[in-house]
Length: 321
Ligand code: BTN
Image 1 (cartoon, helix red, strand yellow):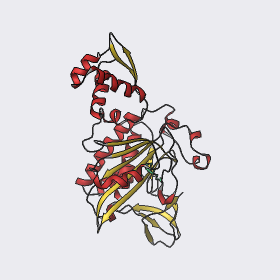
Image 2 (cartoon, helix red, strand yellow):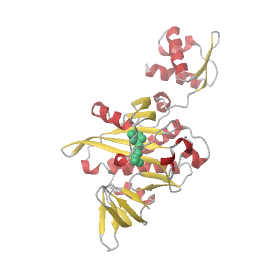
Image 3 (cartoon, protein in one colour):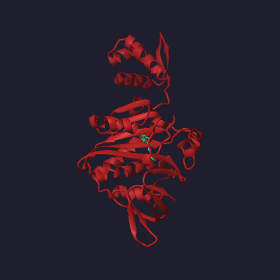
Image 4 (cartoon, protein in one colour):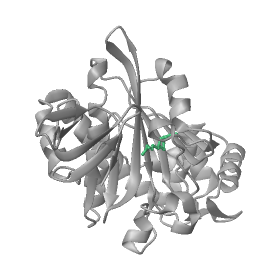
């Protein structure tokens, strides 16, 4: 089904608004004109604006502004990420679904939703996920020790920051996982892993990017300190091509992660860090540590130099500055 739908969309797109007859589409796909018509009906129901005239054929006038797998996969330059996409209009959390299916999925499969009703953030917090954002979970099977799984948070943060920088915005990374623009959060990352003994079976990289929402779409209690790409650029963003660019960038960084010493990623991450060099206060479930952020260990822990000049490494916590 998916493949035929994609081929019909592609044929109509390639025709660039000149009509394509049902007969021609049928011949191309090896199906009857009636089947073509059924596919056209289902595409129209999904928001594809397709004009049809019995004499001339079908003309694609516009595509829906949704993250449909067919749209993402058409022109996607990756070789691993996004070959399989599970798409939902609404879910509780893409990470929860990804974890349910990860064991039987191939590496690189994605879960994407337009809306999350129970989006999850780090440290048990809620992640507000209305229409207009990108809420996605990437299933990876890197075969690394569990203690290295947090490195993938840095990999994803770097990829998001790079792709936003390519749009001309000065995006930076706040330890451990916030991508910010002008000091405001535009993206959060929730990495979850399952391991047997010490090797990870899978890692789910959950990435939430505030793209086309208006700030008023974010409840007031979450709004302070948040921004969206649309608010920063002053223009609507084409989510499909933004996501394609992001997936390509993430794949490039993931390849580096697997083939090069981690210091490569770490150095690039440090160059975009918003945190290093600042006086910070980090809250962990058991205590608060204050001092100057002076580095990040290869496992992603923040190194803080305290007032008594001793250093402490913090693997997880909420960082304030
Ligand atoms: C944070 O900054 O606290 C992390 C936020 C992570 C949000 C993303 S959206 C897609 C995926 N599904 C979830 O429920 N959470 C992550």
